[in-house]
Amino acid sequence: MRLPPPLIENLSRRLIRALIDAHVISSDHPERTIEKVERLITTDLSVEDDIMEEARLLLLEHQAEIKDSDLEYHTLIAKAKGQIANKRGYILSSGPGKLSREKQHDLARQVVNLLLRDDDVEYYLQDREFHPAVQKAFEREMARDAQREEKARQKVLNIKRHIPEESSEFHALFQQFYKELLDKES
Image 1 (tube, one colour):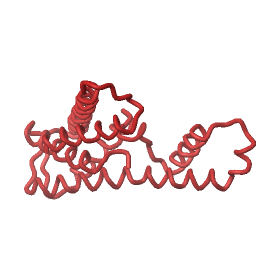
Image 2 (tube, one colour):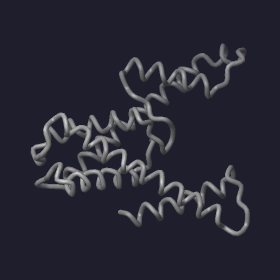
Image 3 (cartoon, one colour):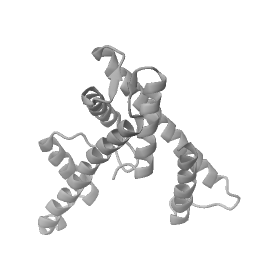
């Protein structure tokens, strides 16, 4: 999955809370609305996992041809993913833990559509203002996550003994510090 489940939960919660606090929406059942947004994001991002698996299987079928070529595996997998996503009309994210700007816009659009159909939600902006408000809130939450990642990275770098950034120890400590920062905000 492109984003870890705790981040999706945090993102959904903060997104809906931000929209409620800004008087963009109100919800008769905010927790239920948050769960719906969380489910939407999780479901959408799981499609990318399916596309990745389909691309792997496709390359596995053509392994003999690929073996004799000068092409690199990661280039081929990216190309296969792109073609499969295009066929499905799906917008790919930019990598694990990251969402491209285009993917953020796509998810914001999906959240808007969900909120417009949700009987628990009332919105206070005109339709043409509603999507930009949701998109801005979504982007703000993703920017917060980037700051969280940078704080976690700096915490690892500030450890007295040098830990190479490519090492599994660095990655494990980064994940631990990142999770602590994420849990603190929940």
